[in-house]
Length: 383
Ligand code: AMP
Image (tube, rainbow, N blue to C red; front, side, top):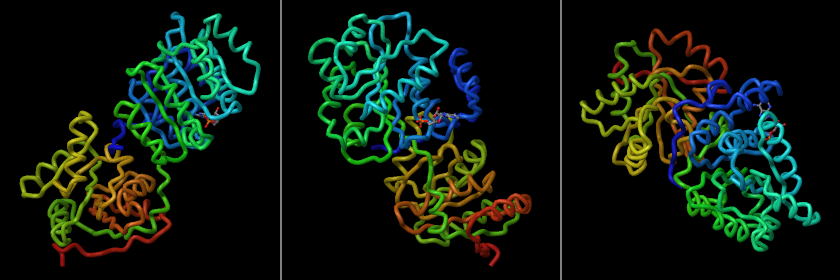
């Protein structure tokens, strides 16, 4: 799977998102105040019509993460099944349908559950009546209906594979493949799974269109596998200090963080002028530009990547040796996420923070919240 970056900003609140009044009202009535992390990541992408592969567990709020965009994208004035949600068990089918019914209660959306272990007739009648816009069901029974010709999926333009790893564990892989082949190729697809075995990567590769892969970061524990140091530096010496750090290492593969796009672009220009092989990653880039920057970096054509937080979120590049905070992060959480970009897959890594005179108070607040001590070292330029 190619490395994908996330959209510039995860949604901080439901009102930031292009959600209809009807759905927004339901959410407000439930008392949901903020999107859960997987919702914050997945909603903007799915609402934008793109495919998503989400690593998320039950209880993470993933049903609404795919359910809200589903409700928004189905045209209830049209007939025919427009959205299909495949789940491993009848319990989950019932649960997902219930959550989506709640979310769509101010809309005319009609949801039908289709699963095995119950009589065929009520489902047949409901399908024949042709009133459902959405089917939530288990692969076996759905395939049954497809083969009998009682279910048509040629109008499906939104498809969800929920708990994909469990579906495969239960032996549904061939059924899922066959069901997918009955749906239009240009549909939007969301896949959620708690784990990402190769079999799922294959499905993603074969059946999805350049999906964004999203993961709620749970790499806080890497904090203690990363060697953490900080350097006092005069604000005006930061670029010189950074260069001396890079030059002191043997061929580092480094991500350098800046807080703003402008700052990232400026530092990138400076380093390029100084002859470094450097790329830049920020939110105002097209997917094509990001992909090029990333492939230059992963292939080693560039050795330094200047990035903003959001642009670098979710990056998983195994050989990164250094994360350098040119600007100090906003808070301890951002610090942890940033340094989690190194020491991937159990390898060691170094996180270095440049602390200027204007950063002192903020940096102290961050380190107080960390479960480890960040060691002070002296920059080569001051040695
Ligand atoms: P799920 O992981 O989809 O099974 O969701 C777990 C539970 O969290 C369900 O009871 C949801 O109704 C609830 N939930 C989902 N999103 C939110 C949210 N943004 N705020 C509060 N509760 C939520």
